[in-house]
Length: 212
Image (cartoon, rainbow, N blue to C red; front, side, top):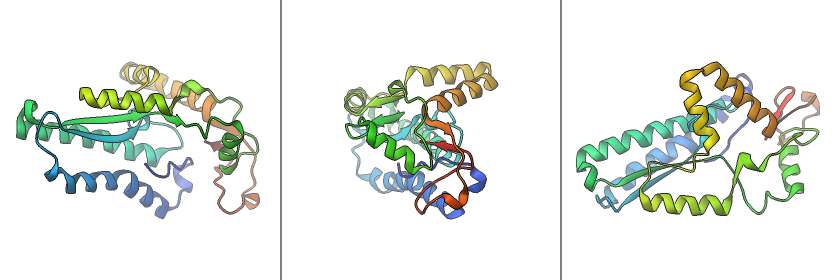
């Protein structure tokens, strides 16, 4: 995945939107298109598509990125069905979709580095809350990924709270929207007052909303 770009859709530049779609969606599709003929048609083979939880539950102010991740979810499901039909479920390569939330490496565990990342988004102050449970430690994510790929699981890395949102979405879409927004608001958001004239080059600002 490339740029996540957190902001209102109406103020995004069209060229930036096209760049996000090409790098996050077209790059994966074209790469698999060219490599699929070289992948052994065996149940021991694995096709791993890296995505994020944005492809399972929509997130506010990440509309374009969310669209690209939903596209990858549909793409992986479609390719899986095609391969199973062509080579039978016993011989077809396993298609695994890895949908992880934000990953925290050793670098971003340091508070000062996290502050810098937030400040570059245009925030005067870092978000009021930053819960580690909203993300997955990098080492744990890699371990889970390798284990699930070995087993040939369809979906990898989806946290329980995301699966809860998916279930709730079928029962009450409005309540799901409220819950998702509150979660993002607490973990990645802080309202700030930033004058467009004061925003320097290379700084992303979204009116009075700033997201990590």
